[in-house]
Amino acid sequence: MNRLQILAAEEGANPLIPNVWEIVVTLLGFALLLYILIKFVVPAFEKTYAERTAAIEGGIEKAEKAQEEANAALAEYRQQLEDARGEANRIREEARADGAKILADLKARAAAESARITEQAHTQIEAERASAVASLRSEVGTLATTLAGRIVGEALDDDERSRRVVDRFLSDLENADGDAARTPVRTGATAVDADGSTGNR
Image 1 (cartoon, rainbow, N blue to C red):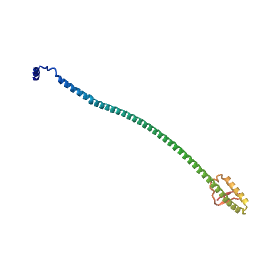
Image 2: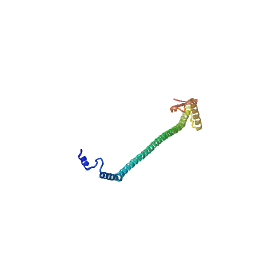
Image 3: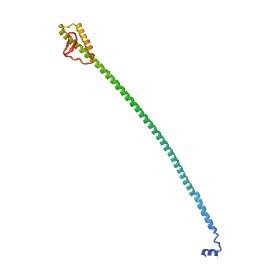
Image 4: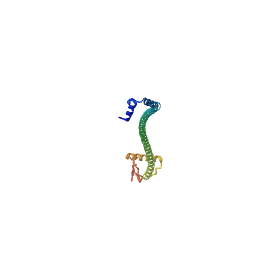
């Protein structure tokens, strides 16, 4: 047997029944420890747990709010991008329409300028032709009068008679050749025959 058991047996105490004072001291120590845990440790744990819960919930709320803001910003960005694309398409179409309008305007101006230049050229050509015809009439009339006077043997100084001779000469010339107005008249030795017809020699 163990020595403690022997001593206990000698003292008359039962080793299976604990000592009362040990129980009391143990209970007091346990109660004190329980009081300290309930009074100080558990509230600290509760506070830390509440703070941790609040922090986690606040973080989740912040994350959800940030996610909502990000989604709203993304939707706004997409809307702005769509608006910018629509605006770019509208500007491009307006530029095409303006370009077509400018091109049509330039073509119309070019056509008008071309018509004006052509008309001016025709007017100038007609004026030059009329001037050339008048000059040729005068020159041919003078030559014809001079030559007719030489052939007939008398001077044709009478203006009325000269004008009649020139007019008859020119009408005969126009009847003989319908293209005389469009072809240049050669000036040179012009002879008037006895019957009033002329010819270039």
